[in-house]
Length: 137
Length: 283
Image (cartoon, rainbow over the protein chains, first blue to last red):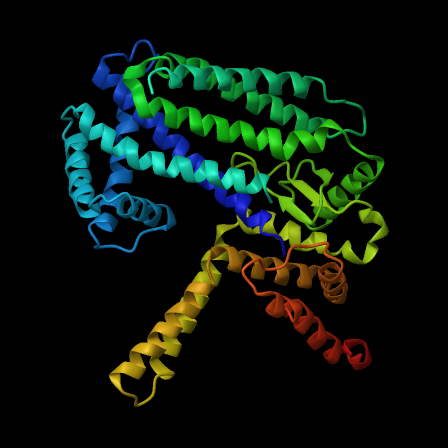
């Protein structure tokens, strides 16, 4: 009868997913910047982070390229890119390339990682918005 | 942005400290939700540890948006503790304590063994906050003030327990989704007769729209209604009518006032009464 039961479950799922992704991006960025030690990150943790991010990009790229329907979070990224006047298909092909580079253990450029951080930022913003919605319920 | 990030990090640090102090100040008597307080304290310590480990990234402008995104996630986690749990556990009324015992006993009898403790919060409409950081052990149940005086609304709590069950077992959602997809696939095959291409497209569009209506939130609500009906039978129907009429529950927010007036709950209840032979009550 109340929307709270479902909303809280969704927030919880999304928060976990975005939490994992943001943590992984910090690890990959730390490797690019040569700051693994400052953050007490091991090569194993970085490898795990890369696997998470490439999995995220592999499922997102076909959605941005218009070849798959996507889940609500992927649709949100698609919508936000379009609203911001970006070309989702460009992002899709970039993400395919970034994922391939990660899998081939090629070091990413900061600019490549910035693109991933940008779309993860959309998801983070959405979770924050859902928490605010909970507050104003 | 370079000066904003360390300020945001300071804010998170400040909130962490403030929450810890407020949790420490919560009463821990025999009739208080002590287990929940311990869980919240542990979770807060975990978040503080994460913050401490990652603080160099938050203070380093080279991490840019990654640091800000991470801080945003931590703030959202803290907001859930601060806004959903703290107001409920900081001060428990006598009625909330009594309801906690009733709800805990109900959860036990229903076999919801994963629920270890419950906190009741008289904050408004009947609702549940079933999960915190993927843990279903310590739900918050929201009720109207003086809820014990509204005994006809009490069975509504079974609907709220349904949310915990629905999240605990993904199989329910998957089965409902399969049933839904099969239903609309079958409709697409049989419902469209010998019509023009334009009419066919219109009908297909209408069917797609109808299928999309049943998103995961609506399937969750349907499951919880069925669960409450399964558990409480006729009492659930009465509870639904009374609760909707006196505003104890939120109704479907996407319905127009007119649709809400003749809502499905009342229809379902009426049907139930007719089957029970109590037709006079439905009028």
